[in-house]
Length: 282
Image (cartoon, rainbow, N blue to C red; front, side, top):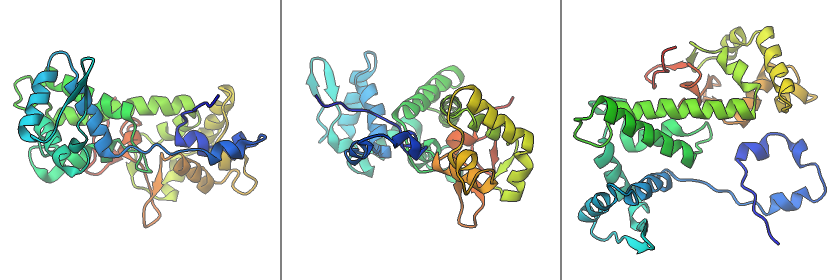
């Protein structure tokens, strides 16, 4: 009997003490990384549209009209995605732009939709989650239907931005559940503007804040931050705590060693970035 276990990368990397049992190395030796390209996840959106009971046929016909080489194969009323649609930038980009327009705004100033969506839904290591991408598109569609029903495209650019806001809130809830100590730390940064330096970060993470974070982990029976909470070298050091959050892909260091945060977490915690997606108002 062979079993497969699906684990998020942060669950593997969080603490090496988790793997201190007999033959654990054999499990890790057999691991296979499941990496989602942006085109893979756009393809997942296309696949859902192609199999929708109400607009599936229209979507498939529209795609075939634009890209005649794409053949939709059917098996028991389920259509499979033609691999040609996501193998390269085109036609994936063309389909995304047909759904949501080329820009995330009235002009190209705010960014190009095809690049903007995955970059704003990825964590600090560039990793994307299928669930979060689908949620962002679902929210974008609902927002467009409720607020811009006469819009000429399926998704309004403001709906796309609101999709990121919703996805961020969901990802933040997941992070709080898995790592309770993260919540108090990033909640204390609400209203801050990233990137920031270590001195500025020290102003947000007061002794009370740090104590609350550790107590939160303990009260919920979860491991504390690995370096800051238990490492013999980094215990109690702010830099070690930053390293713990970098390991979880919640933070990352810029080239000039300032601390930054990807939008998928930043927006949900109410943290600002010049020119970025605005956090929802309290």
